[in-house]
Image (cartoon, rainbow, N blue to C red; front, side):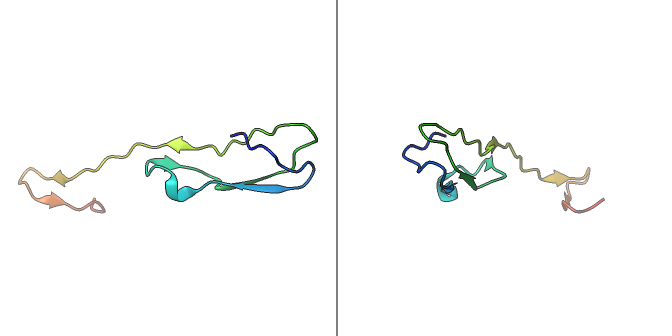
Length: 71
């Protein structure tokens, strides 16, 4: 992410709008603080990952539902 017009040497917090992220995303940080040098750019990496999930409904051989927490 490239954010223009930050004040040099002054810490600025850059925050993601997590309400507009997709439901299948996972991230470690929602906000990062940076203090760029004069006439420089800072690369921000929020380490956003796309996750895949599945929904399983399990039945035994008699077609009885098996709860998720059962052994």
